[in-house]
Image 1 (cartoon, rainbow, N blue to C red):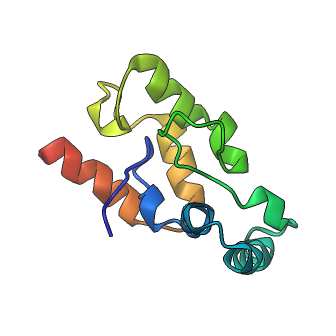
Image 2: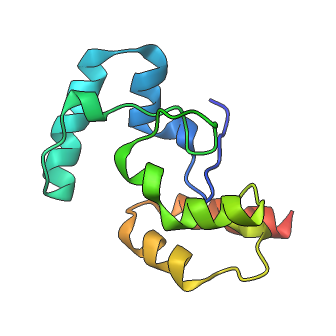
Length: 115
């Protein structure tokens, strides 16, 4: 699977919401909605499980991604990821990454900073 790194370092191509959308698979959407409803303590419907990736330019974005302050900040500054930012690692990014249960996001950003 190829990478599609979001502003915050998450790999959109590995995201189950993105995968379900790209395959147009309602069964996968239902499974993700059920899992994430339990995981995040709020109900998700299959209609919410749609995303083309936060940097795709598409209007089809998963709930939080539409208004994500990290994504919007990076786009405003013209960056591909937060790794390119002179303010790395800022409070906005650190706050988001403390909530996301995926250490690979930070690792992806650190790798880009080194590369």
